[in-house]
Length: 287
Image (tube, rainbow, N blue to C red; front, side):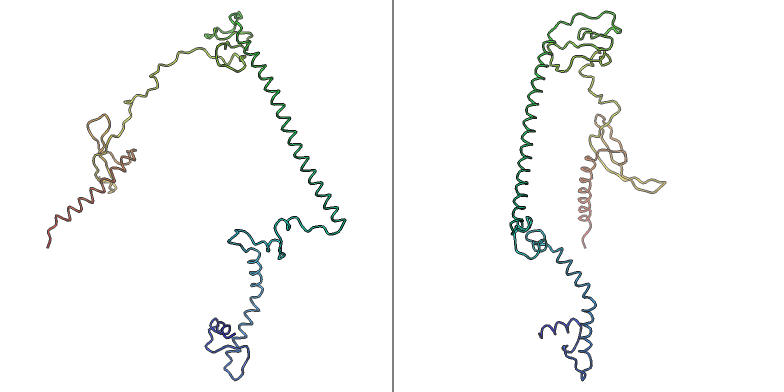
């Protein structure tokens, strides 16, 4: 107990030993310290209880990384499955109701599994029927592709340049001639979908013209600082060597878009500046 009173005395800043007994012959410091402790406990007890309950309700187990089991299900020692299922029935009516619920749950799960199996069988059956219909339609289309469509309808509204590739049956639809091709779609198309034959562009037409007003920086040769008279602001200018040209040109940094070349040149410029500074220091006379 002496350690407890010593701890209280250190917290309260008391120079004398505090006891629970009040001695009138003393200077009153012990009594005041006891009254101070009691008053602080009475004043902060509601706050302490609220904080304590909050800490218990929101405590966290660092090992399992979750809230402790007894804070969720109480202090009764039982496993998680038993706590979730609830208490076991003890009496005969409760046991009968429990067995009835268990049987209903079992029958329900059995019915759900049976329904899923029926759905799978129905989908498989429909898939086989659709596959068979698609095969029959494909065979019918293939047999239709082998027919001769050389006859053309007279009096067509437009003379098409691709008349050897389709046959006009009506004023608004035509049938394509797709024999010997990999075309597997319905050959009937609307007349507005047809386009006249146009000559293809030559093979080299997509090649861009390298000299069509486009310039490419080949190398950056030098750097200088220029000062504008109007604003007295210094700006960097680079001596640029254009690809395909012999004469270099001084350009400000705002007009250049070659970031990789600028970075490489700036790194080398810093190294050269350091080397020149070292050489300038070596040239100074030594005392």
